[in-house]
Structures are given as structure tokens and as C-alpha cells.
Image (cartoon, rainbow, N blue to C red):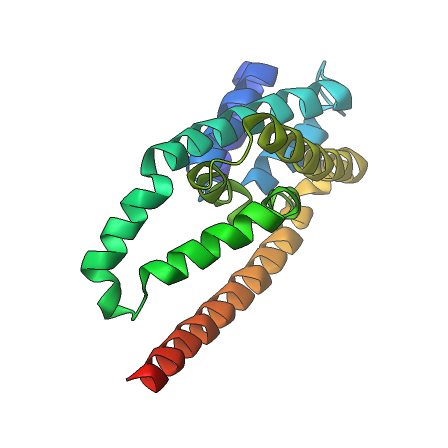
Length: 203
């Protein structure tokens, strides 16, 4: 996949970066680390600038995030409630759990969106619960853009600084991503165990 990404960016420049980053936000398995660090490297050998790459990547990222936010709006909490009412017994989830999660996001959602834009995988998916909770679109846009801008500036500048060694950075980012995935898996297991224990105590 890396070869296809880099060839596409070589052929289409800023437009290629915009399209790939937008797609990466909708389809997380596409690695933004490759796109951004290679984009930074391209500024050292092509007629491109760091500012131009950051702007193209940020616009693409926000565009993809808005699409997922829209999907979240379509899902709506009521849809989730109906799903939980029918299938929640499998994980021992209740409609009350959905309400608590929604209330938590209403309270901390803005900063959650901001910080999650700096975390692989979650940086894309966080847009869905933001839409589901009907978070203010303009607030969502502000925090998404802010977090995305920081992520893009860091990786593009690193790519430009290391030049042809940009692939080494991707390797380090893979390690960072794997650590994040392991932590998420661990937290998910803890969450499921706590849900089971709590509901078991109610029986």
C-alpha cells in the first residue's frame, strides 16, 4: 500500500495529499503517517512547501471527519437505544448505559475530539460519536481542525527534517500505533468485565 500511496502523491501533489487524507479519515487502515511524512519529504525534492502540504492534509482530514460526523448524525442515539434493547443482553448493556455514555460525551466531548485527533485509528472514528451526540457542528469543526493541524504539522515537519529517511519515522509511528491499539484492547476488556460484574451483581 505504501508504494501506491507514494506514487499517487508523486503524480498528483497537493490534490493527491488532500484525497488520500480525506480517504484515510473515512477508511482508517490507510496510514496517515505514510502520507504526511512522505509529504514532508516531498517538500525537499519537489516544488511543494511544508505549509502547502499541511494545508492540503488538514482540509482533507477535516472533510473526511465531517463525513463521519454526518454518519453519526444519521445513527442517532435512539437508533443505538433500539439496538441495545434488542441485542444489548448479549453484552449485558442497557439503555441506561447508552444514556450515561451520551451524557459523558456531552460533558467532555469537545476535548475528547481534540485529543483523539492525535491518536491513531481513534482520530478518525471519534467523529461518529460526536455526530451521534449532536455535538455543535462548529465546535466539532474547531476542535477537529485544531487537533488535526497539530498532528499534521508535527509529521510533515518530521518528514521534511529527515528527508529520504522518512520511512524510518513510519516505522517508529507503527510502534506508537501498536502500543495505542494494545492499550485500547486492554481498556475494552476491562470495560466488558466491569459491565458483566455490575450486571451480575444486579441478578
